[in-house]
Image (cartoon, rainbow, N blue to C red):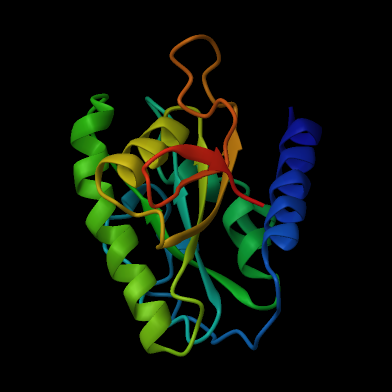
Length: 185
């Protein structure tokens, strides 16, 4: 099990590394407010002192918690992501219901707020979302229903639900001006 977790951490780190077009200096975070340090007690309060670093938002799966991203101490997914140059975890999003429409409604303002802060800091004004299982559905629902296409630079999915109801078929997609779907490169 530990080997599988390590491989998953490496995979997520590799995916995020590929998602970043350029690296910039990271701003050190306070341990008291950092999403990787809060674990299961995380709230949905975003860390806004990420400077020009690309902000990353983590969202857990159903029956999970923010501790899913922080449970391996120094080798946790959260810490591995945060150790990469030019990116920083800005939010380890916590939710308490399994209704993804309700969660997406709570998640969307956080994404928007973090993306706006990124632009104010001189960054890209876009976030990377890493979702696990139901977290992937929540991310897609928030992006689609709350017009976040311009605030999200990349979505990395882990164990996204499969089948006809899978909202990630053929992702990443962006809406063009005529509201038709097309592939985004």
